[in-house]
Image (tube, rainbow, N blue to C red):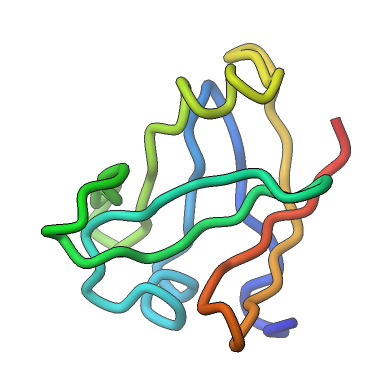
Length: 102
């Protein structure tokens, strides 16, 4: 696990990614796909033409946000839930694994 970027914040149906984490794992990626595997959410960077959920610029620092409301509701996480998820990059599958307790 990267010692600089250990967590993402989930709040109001959005996933918040720090600028450092974005540069490390998503560099210039404009969209991502989400799926659930076991007790993890998996976040896969996509090329723009592949569709997916937009990774939007949140502020001047370069932090990013993904509107994942529909996906999160589908796996039982309501808009009122907020918390953090520990992250780990899976090099073999090029996916960011988010682990959290509901």
